[in-house]
Image (cartoon, rainbow, N blue to C red; front, side, top):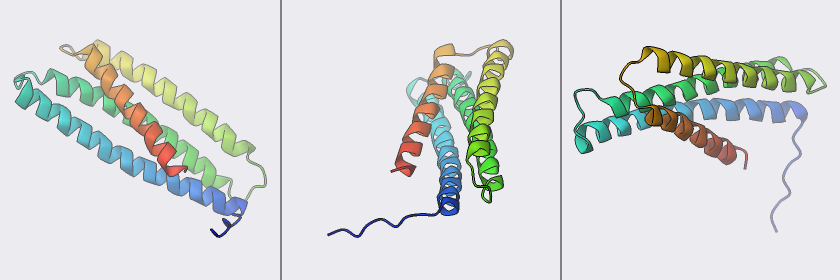
Length: 147
């Protein structure tokens, strides 16, 4: 018979959430690097577009934008969680999550505007694909950490 899971105190649950956010950041950073390397290899080896590197540049920009916005969200959420460890309510922690999500969306919108207006030869679909892949990987990482 499996032993019952221990009941965690509120501060222990918050520390666990902070640990999950830190792991999420590390894993996303490695995934970003891997995605950029894979796109570059596909660009240079399979497609033979070594001169312009459009695919790797476009995917790297989209994935980097996703990483940046998610990192800002993680920093805001974890700093809020650290500040609220001694408080008895979760209201400020939830407020920090909302602020982090708002910052994430603002950075994403401004980032796409900058990318599409300043970067001249770019593959729009590859930029959006890089962003979407990083968002999907973020969801997978969060689901894995929360099981």
